[in-house]
Length: 84
Image 1: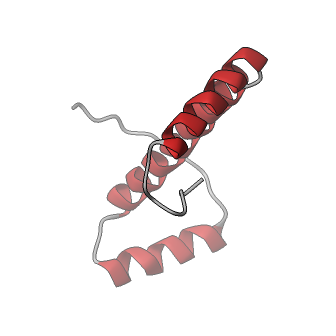
Image 2: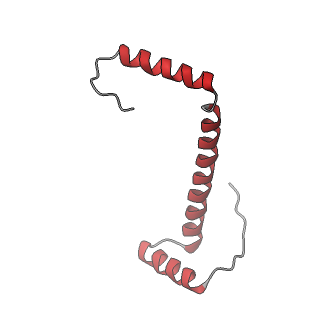
């Protein structure tokens, strides 16, 4: 993976807080910022995925099929309490 340099402007309060954290955790500022951006991107991808799944489940035929599958699983398992 290549690397790119960027320049950002952030409020001093945030910079100072991040600086304290990086010193406490013994990590470089670039690593800290990279990890924060990775987490933000992960949450964004997750939200998009959930949005797409919810769109699929708006279809009443999909809802009916999922209910049938859940009932079939429930009828064919000995577990007293299913997680859903």
